[in-house]
Image 1 (tube, rainbow, N blue to C red):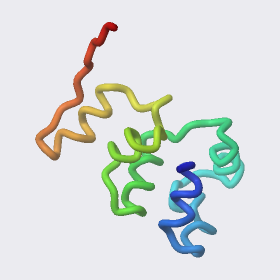
Image 2: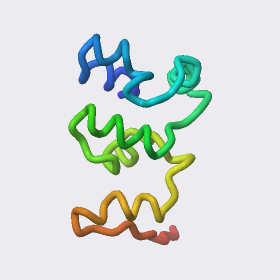
Image 3: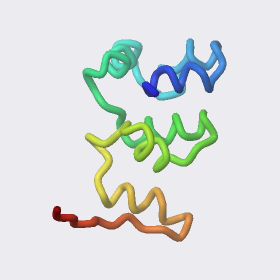
Image 4: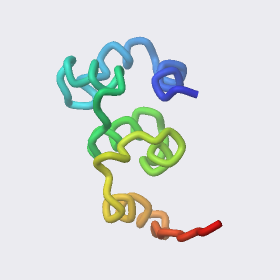
Length: 93
């Protein structure tokens, strides 16, 4: 499912209208995010996770948002509270 469809189905119309305020970004930036021209910053991923009552790492892994700006170190910090860590897996066919 497209992330924006998922978001639209899981937040109120009022929250969707004020999404730029929730994300602490301009309406222009929100438009670039919606058009796929830009990716979410880590603080925006955290704000969305709070709004959706999800964990930030779930949004990153399940919906692919924030991948451009979230480093492995940042992802590690996001899951540390749960006693987890992010690791790399090398696979060859």
